[in-house]
Length: 100
Image (tube, rainbow, N blue to C red; front, side, top):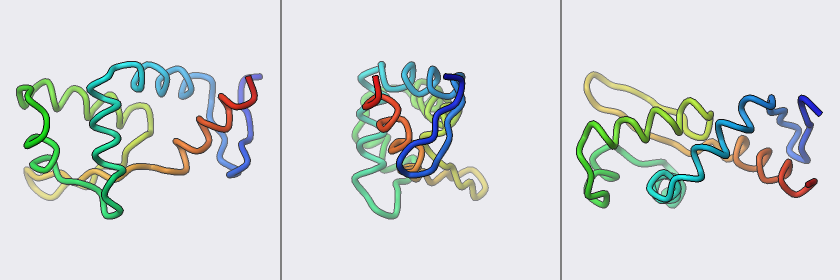
């Protein structure tokens, strides 16, 4: 099945499903996503950086992977970024897994 409709009504392409699986397979990215999702209003880069003992470049790479997978939405204001979990995408991914 190339695309599947979840209970939430969100459709994910096969390519996006693979990107999400890859993104979530990394323990650090999983933890970053958990941190972002723990705050209803999302989290700033500074908030995440305080809890992650990695370089800014490494953190930026993880954010890029999560954004490419569609798991986070990024709002940029100048050099600052604010991240919000896309719960609809995560829910659709989990619905897809539940059908396996």
